[in-house]
Amino acid sequence: MDFKTVSVADPASAPESSVPSISPKKQKELDNLKKACADFESIFVNQLFKEMRKTVHKTGVTSGSKAEEIFSDMLDQERSKKMQLGLGDMLFKQLSATIIPPKRGRYL
Image (cartoon, rainbow, N blue to C red; front, side, top):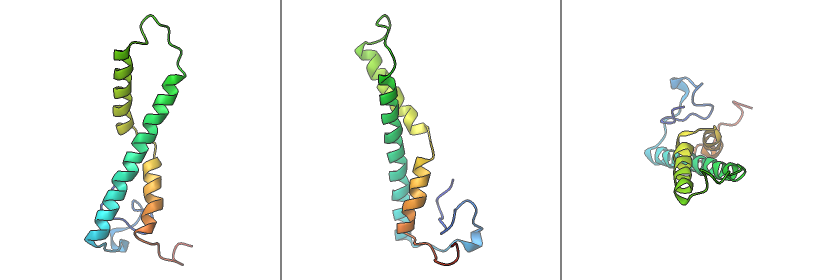
């Protein structure tokens, strides 16, 4: 989903003519909010991986070394950056209404 221009409704479904013009200051705020939402989602997914990994039974033969633990943590961090659950997009959609308030009456 592209958030370069944001409409009051769903940005993907709005025609370009209905997208209101946004000041550069508000656009910068939206860009910062989008990055913060993506970072939050990445941290959240990383925490999910850590907790899920704790539930896996370790055999002791090939697992449990400090090097493997470091590698697994680094791998989980990279995976969490690439994996998108949609949480960041939902947060952005909800929180962007504080920067660009929705028009009342049109969508209710």
